[in-house]
Image 1 (tube, rainbow, N blue to C red):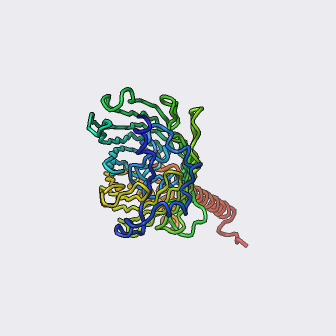
Image 2 (tube, rainbow, N blue to C red; image 1 turned 60 degrees about the vertical axis):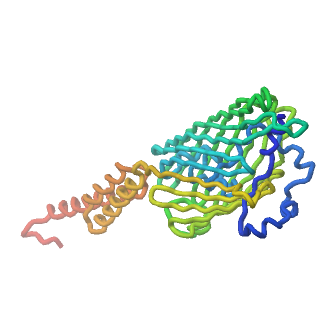
Length: 425
């Protein structure tokens, strides 16, 4: 029975991109995935041997749309499944709701709340999977019915170290999670289980090969160890280490890639083969962007596409997946995520006020009003001590004022050495 319970979750997940629903129904997907290395029987032998698949099933959001190449991107609430370090770098406080029509009549619901307080990030979230299940006897008569369900709940904390004006910092975070599987007794006795896991992640952003002007960095590197915990009933959790990079070659475009290394903490169960992911996001207008990606993993490869609509206080992410389990006559492999924006704790307003004080200081300095320039520079630094341009301007202005005072003192001393009836030369 345990194999029957796990069976649906070992199926592959792949998102559709640049295809039309009609022609897709006639496509031989086995041929498609053979060409991208979906895996031979030897490579698939270790697939589907872990418990609690909800720990690695993406609920939605840009993490899903970019084919899980999101360890270094992690820019919305779907970071919860990608990199626990990202909560201290998010711009807004968000409450996110996700619904995913997964395989056949299987659905996944998700909820994440995340808040950033200066350099500290906090989040709590979870997801819930449910599957109607019917048991038949050898005569094909229904003898039992129920609903298999599985859920995970986690609490996240992270901190962004070494943040300054020129360097966004190095974020480090962790998420502690618990997972629960419920199988009705009339379906299969003693199959319910509880497990515990933890994620640890690191994320850093900086400028590299940047060919456009923007305060935000264009390059990111991230590493995450996900779903590490003790085996449950002899079965390992879907533990994995992911490393990723993300690059913005031009302002509207992000490209990313991840390396996925599965691990097994159960001595008698081998780990699945190494996989990878590639993804891209393109901002088409200030309020609309599109994403696509590909996850390459034996027994779980998929292609992805999605779109994000950003309004004043809400953002909506819609995704579609293409893999060997996709059914085009039903609305499955489709997810929708709604993110409610509760503001940025005043960070944007503070940044704009600091910029205003800095510009006023420059104007005053250029006009020779050094005392005024010093006052505005100091105001900017009082609001943001990491704003190094204001610190440099303050240093220069103080040195200039001191030099002017020295010059005036020299002039006064020179005037004191002459008298009205004695020529200066």
